[in-house]
Length: 180
Image 1 (tube, rainbow, N blue to C red):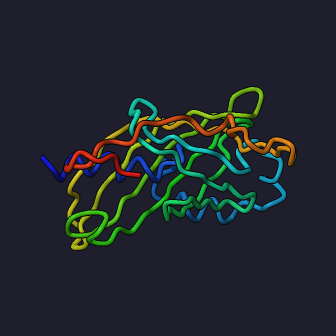
Image 2 (image 1 turned 90 degrees about the horizontal axis):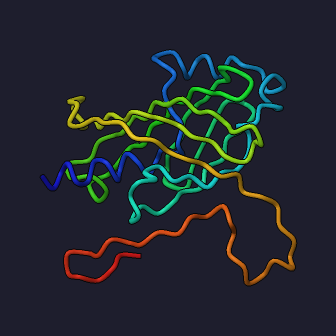
């Protein structure tokens, strides 16, 4: 039970809210020319809530580049490719040590992302697969991530929170103290 309780938050953290392009997504994204993707609305910096239904889930920040790559603050890296004027497919991977997943392993996230008409947010249904170091699949699931573009704000905005960052309530640790 403890292992499954770890799987969803671990997989969700990477999300950035995207994923799923299929087995050749990495090569397809890297074959795309930066000029062809530079104007795509998915390019930019995003605050990502990979499990929007979980109020204890802290957001991550992801950067989606015009060259077909993406990275986030949780150590996730992967690729994306445009599938339409406001849609993209993504695949990312996160390698986890013993301290983040009992026994270690990796998580593969595959998703489809749609940017809203204003270009300021996106929604991405995704799947995740948790794989042990020996290649055994130890868990999988689906969820939906949401992203909000990180805006440029003036220096005078000091003292105000960034609207793109959602609020969350950290879960209490086993000892009863909230985890930061």
